[in-house]
Image (cartoon, rainbow, N blue to C red; front, top):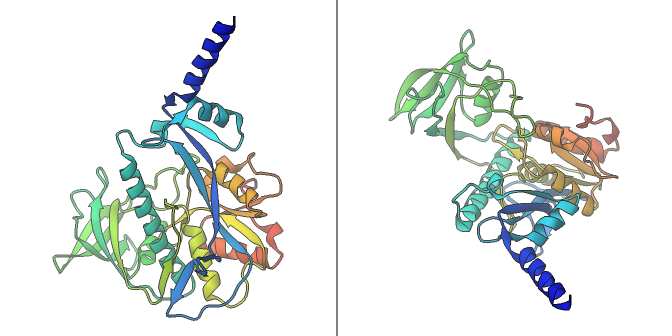
Length: 356
């Protein structure tokens, strides 16, 4: 019996240490975008007056174990199943098959850089700055109305839906505003510069994909079906001193931090506010992954308020930690209004995911 028990224990130990094809998501660290890194502001601004502030605007993250280079064991998987704040998923649901750890890290770093650029443009436009940019087509979506019509290298100069006046495109927000009121499938006349020559193209628009919470729920408005490479002329120099965090989901909190630093007064009113969400060049807040882990991370950091993308509300309902109030936001303007309402003591009237 002693020998059998020892063998069983050894077998169980081996099983618990064998790598498994799973990934475990856990609440990650949070970072105050109004805080400092090595004694310097995390958001560094040059070329405009900045103002002292207080409170916290915390970006939230998800820590993932498993995947290329970091396999999980049975012990990790069992612990994840038993912990309400963690989620266990097949590794292929998190990382594309065949990718290496180096490729994952490079993509995460590129996404973080893009989120910072988008946050800077969105924040400055929210504050009324003119942010001129050149929008060059980098790629065309297969199967879209732009395929075979729009070419890589075309520079978008104007857009005109049927029955409307032509809108000159001097910033991404100009393009996004027109498409937001254009029904999917409707044709638009796209004015482009092709090899320096002006050309008008007729493009059938396409619908937005579904949200992360509901793949069947598409947003109103339409898309052109192209990937753009924007060349931006910033009126203010803004840099971010942040390491060891990647991905696109910090954009909204970066943008709010910029807005707070560039406006007089304390936008937060001294409150601890956490949040998440991508932000594009037009200031639209997008859904992200790992929302439940981010809610738990915000609570651990002492936040009492959380700004969640409206596209994640289906995942939020029924999973809000005690003591945390979740406010849904769809645009950077809505997020800014929410922070100002919380800071002035009027947060109780803000829309929540539970309210639809």
